[in-house]
Amino acid sequence: MSQAQSTNRGDSMSSRRIFPRAIAEVIAPALAESQPGSHVKVPNYLTMHYWWAYVHPRAVWFFERQWLVNLILWGNYERLRDAAATELGDVLSGATLQVACVYGDLTSRLIGRVAAGGGRIDVVDVLPMQLSNLRRKLPPGAPARLLAMDSADLNIPDASYDRALLFFLLHEQPGSHRERTLSEVFRVVRPGGKIVIVDYALPHWWHPLRYLWRPLLALLEPFALDLWRHEITRWLPAAARTGLRRQSFFGGLYQKVVIRR
Figure 1 (cartoon, helix red, strand yellow):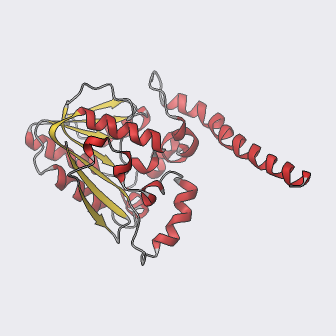
Figure 2 (cartoon, helix red, strand yellow; figure 1 turned 180 degrees about the vertical axis):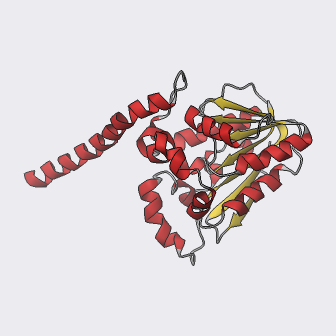
Figure 3 (cartoon, rainbow, N blue to C red; figure 1 turned 90 degrees about the vertical axis):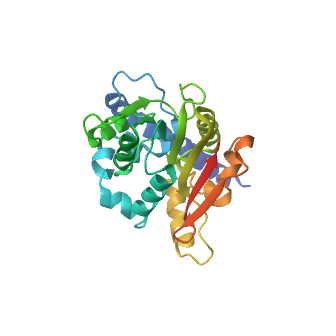
């Protein structure tokens, strides 16, 4: 390798290191402003890769539009939302856990089922700004608790919930965080309970988005392609890898995985 090549390579690697750091430095003041009094540490992957979608104060203003979240999911938001809700049950008694806030009306739809069953839903998210946004969407007196927590470190006792939902969360997390999240969710759901996961999957070979969507995911959501390369079982605790059900949607691009605790 020539000296010039070595220098160029070194400059490129240095740029890759500086660029994420620069983003973090820019977003840090906005992050602190949006989370007054919060003692929950925000994972680095969020500030590095998802500041534009969840962390920046203007993110909620931009993305909290039903038509937009439906567009991002290629017109499948309502279908996937309803598939998740139906899997959880029409009447939700006991305790339900939703891991991470979701743009759109998913939680608002679940609240009706929870109220019908006399139950309660807890929604955990590491960003209080996202929890505040969700609170504005819920009706007064909704049977819901909104808790500021990292999904990979839930400050919740074992076997606290009858069911849990992870809706398009895992593809946003690096592998180690994803593994800890699934382990924590498995821990806090009671034996006999249900865990429902809705997320990306590898589309069928004939699906045009298998080739068109890949580069955009690689650019904007750098961990999403993990779910194209591997089954979700790769990150599940050993005890959760048997007896699960999987259903594909939209030519395989999306999946619903159901785990019986």
